[in-house]
Amino acid sequence: MTIQTMDPDWLVFDPQPSRPAFRLPPGAVDAHCHVFGPAAEFPFAPERKYTPCDAGKDDLFRLRDFLGFERNVIVQATCHGRDNRALVDACRAAGDKARGIATVGPDVSRDELAELDAAGIRGVRFNFVRRLVDATPKSVFLGIAEKIREFDWHVVVYFEAADLAELRPFLRGLPTIVVVDHMGRPDVAKGVDHSDFQAFLDLMGETPTIWSKVTCPERLSVQGPPYDDVVPFCAAITERFPDRVLWGTDWPHPNMTTHMPDDGALVDFIPRFATTPDLQRKLLVDNPMRLYWAR
Ligand code: 0GY
Image 1 (cartoon, rainbow, N blue to C red):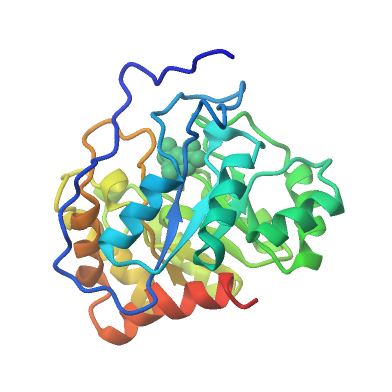
Image 2: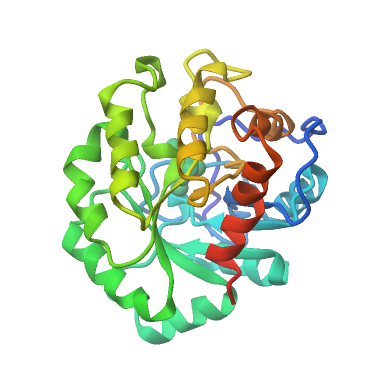
């Protein structure tokens, strides 16, 4: 077996986050996190664009319990390509406490989808971020979206703000619910009133099937912790579309270059934009439960 060593400049997750001051509502879901390997058991994919540290299910479940979450939605990370074994293993081990988002190819069979569904997978991720994946034609993604419909799954999309205009018709045409990662990665230096972010709000306004993760202040912030510059973006989406937002830690925080966030501080970021118990319950409990635990 080839030993897969993490990239020399890789930033490892914080093994001792602070305990958040914000008390999560009962039943809260961390709806965006990943598992990496461990590589000795679940090797990373040959086509990956980065080699991370190991960050397996046991570390994830420990963080879940420490922060006060009840459940996780684990999203297939690009370093595992279309090999969903680490994801499926984590979902099975968590029992009803986890659901998953997989990555599949156009040749995926109905039996394979059914097996993933039985393990707790409830959707697929389409990635358009060029530093993470080689491009996939939209026709291929549309074919996959048609295949997953019968399982009542949804699509998670990851793209950069600059690509929104080009992707807009595709996103509107998808036949399932579409969850956009990290608010479509706005350039927060431009401010919430900039036409780029307003275009994203307009898209959500016009398309009731489009949801957003109001996540990753640590990734989007120009100022750095405590991420004041990201608060208005999360607040704008959460206040206008309170029934279509999700939140997650993004642990173990792949490809961070500036700093490694304290997961406890990330939890404390939530009430700064979801300012009422009602908004917090929708964001952290009602919405993810409706989307991922309806069955
Ligand atoms: C995230 C963000 C990133 C990476 C991935 O699957 C991945 O490799 O999602 C990123 O590098 O921006 O959501 O974890």
